[in-house]
Image 1 (cartoon, rainbow, N blue to C red):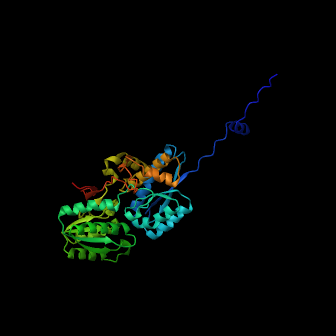
Image 2 (cartoon, one colour):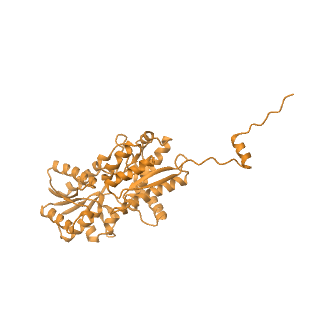
Image 3 (cartoon, one colour):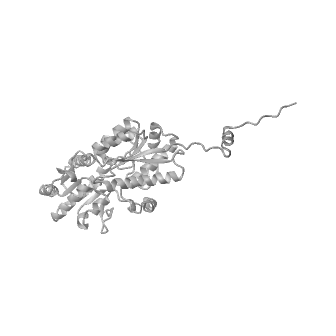
Length: 378
């Protein structure tokens, strides 16, 4: 007689028997932690906190859809205060926690200090620095110096200026500002333009009256145009000094001055004294209108200029990880550099495979309108 078959007891069924009911839930996958490095304190905190909020928004959205590769994403706040020396400390903290990805840094001086450490220790960056010296593995959605300088040079050429005086942050934390001035100087001198360069100190280091003296020196050189390559805290003081000096030559300020902190700290006449090379805030970008609504709903405030770039950086990273099917450094790096026509808040994003640079950067010449808003110059 054939004996009846014994039923097969699966692992899940056994778990249900032992627990007296449904099978115990499988352990949750560990979270995917990413670092966000930016100046979240110090004189550029308005920038850094906007950047942090941009990533927080992207993380909230991806977690609402189930995370990345089934893992919830968490943020490690890496506040470098815009300082190169502190950026190394922050990078070592990220590395010690075995965090695989970092969005940032923002300041080029911080990037020159931190990015080599990240790359040597297997942390893949979505860097937001603009100095070409910070390039390497990973990718960026930000404009790089070599992409900004031609826009500025075309503007200066159109003014007909034959003598340009430059006020340049040449300090240890001025890698981006000094690099921009270097590139622009080379282009202008090749076209026969005379360039007079005057170094300026960062605001925290500047003695009383320093900016008035530096601006006076620039004006005394007799230029047709003054170019200001600083971050916005220094730009504020220079705009004040230029306005106080009365009518004078055309002025162009570099991209790092385009920040709500600049317009908040200046009068309308001071804010309008110069034009700017740069990127408009998210509210001025047709491609960012959904992002603006989501940001305001989440944080109860208006977004700034650079948070949208950090938001896009995080989203591009998450998409690359999903396409790679892994968090392995080189697999994700390859997928990052294969990004094509990604629909970003800052516009469509295509990454150049050879460099990791964005191929279509949204850089324009800007002015400040009557509402103290940066807008694209007519």
